[in-house]
Length: 336
Image (cartoon, rainbow, N blue to C red; front, side, top):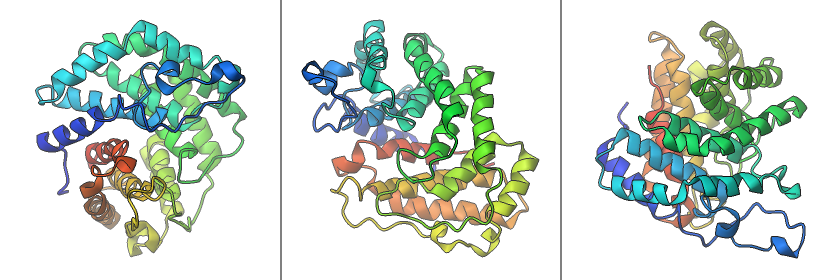
C-alpha cells in the first residue's frame, strides 16, 4: 500500500476538524418540533455536538480528533484538542445530550448512523490511557446502546442504501464498540442481525453508485460480514457474494465515482463513497490469504479510490465538515 497515515496528514485532518466541530452554522438539524418551545438553536439543544453542519458529523469529527490525539500526542494541534475537549466534554453537557433523547419526538433521532458513530467515539475514548472522558461520555453511550438493543429486534429487514440509513455500516461500527467495551450481548445481537439479513445473499450485482451515496451497499455489506463472521465462514460467504471478483466484476466497484460539484453537499457525498470503498476494500483484503489473487486486486482498488478522494478531503465545507473521518477509517484499515 502506498497511502498511509503520517504526521503531516494527521495534522491536516486535525486542523480541519478543529475548524468545524464548534462551527454552529450553517446547520442541518434532525429535530422534531412538538411545540413552539422546541424552536431552539443547535448549541442550546446539543451543548457538545452542535457544530460540523450536523450532529453526526460533529460526533465523528470528535472521533477523528481523539483518534489522531491518541496516535500523535505531540501533534501541533494536540493542546487545542485537549483544551476544547475539557471545555465541552463535561458531565453537565453529557446529561443534556442524553436528556435530548428522552423527548417524545426523538425516538428516531440519528438512527442508525449517528447512534453507531457515538458508540465508535466512546470506543475510541476507552482506548486512551486516561479514560476519564470515556467515563464522562458513558451515560450517552449507554443510551445509544440501549437504543440498538430495542431497535434491532424490531428491524426485520436491512436498509441497503448508500446513505446514513445503511444498516451494515451501523452494525460494523457498533461491533467495534460492543467488543471493545466487553458488551457481549450487544455484539451477539449485531451478529444475529447481520446473519439474518445477509447470510443468504448471493451474486451481488452492485447497481451503484447512486447520485448521493457515500457508502457502497455491496462493499459495506461485505465489510460487515468480514467483521461478524469467523474467517472460514466469511471466506465461503464472500466467494458466493462476489463470485467474479477475480475478474474485477462487478466493474462498478472498481471505478471511483466522479464528483461534478463539490459545493453541492449531496454530490460531495461521492468523495466519501470513494473513501469508504477504500476502507472496505482494505478490510476485505485483510480477510484474504496472501496467495489469493483477489487480495492484491482489493488492495489495488483501495489505492485507486484513495488516489481519487484524498486530495479533496479539505477545500469546500460541504465535504470538509466530514470527509476526514472517512479518510481516517481507510488509512487505518487493516491490511494483513
